[in-house]
Image (tube, rainbow, N blue to C red; front, side, top):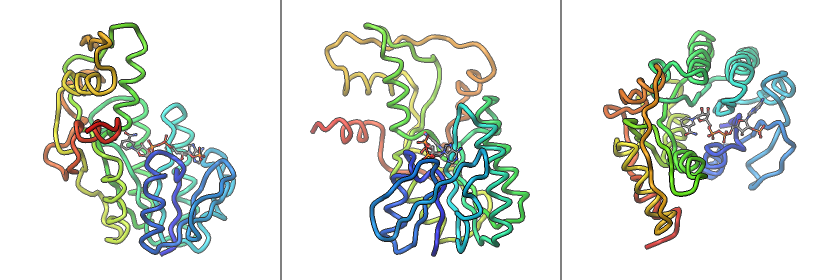
Length: 260
Ligand SMILES: NC(=O)c1ccc[n+]([C@@H]2O[C@H](COP(=O)([O-])OP(=O)(O)OC[C@H]3O[C@@H](n4cnc5c(N)ncnc54)[C@H](OP(=O)(O)O)[C@@H]3O)[C@@H](O)[C@H]2O)c1
């Protein structure tokens, strides 16, 4: 298949591009930056979802689009208006499949970025282009990034009390997306998350134990007011009844921080 990947240079994109390429697909990556990349089966096209630059060229002769491009700080322009532009060129080019990656719980957590992702899902579902949508939970690597940011104060790492985390290995999300490409357009797929739902206190303690042992760093739960925090405390960002990957948070920490 000839597959266009938007966001192919991002965290998830860098994982899925070699997988699809190794599976024998011809992969084209849309990026705002001129890039060259690994493998004869991967080509790059410069384009921008916020302006429409390069989009028509990017979908020429493409069978399927894996739409991963996103920007939480500019979500209306990228995720909503950009998705609308992408859908229009995909429809005109008679693309047979558009696969979109979304986030578990976006319909129940009133967070601005999530509202934009929900709007993008609706645009896709109403586009007339055959589609699949996979909602995934947070990636282990993303949770680690957030914890790292929270650890910038000496000794004290503030964490939101009562939150739950069901993070998942990015490779497992990429593998699920590859299967979805092969399965063809299937509408809304079952949510996909990590193997365990953990209280954030446990997640933070394991991260400190693995990355900052003996530093005296201590995770301090802080109660956050508001509807967004309430939704996270209710666990709407998790999918205990969905499909699950197998790599646990502690296995991922062990692998990523290189200790036996
Ligand atoms: N991170 C998580 O834990 C998580 C969990 C579940 C679902 N997701 C979803 O998975 C997807 C990928 O997430 P990620 O963490 O891999 O993202 P990321 O690392 O932040 O990468 C974002 C990508 O979007 C592209 N992009 C941004 N603005 C663009 C624009 N104006 N035009 C074209 N491309 C643009 C960037 O490409 P260039 O810079 O090369 O242009 C980059 O490759 C997103 O839809 C996200 O909502 C993420």
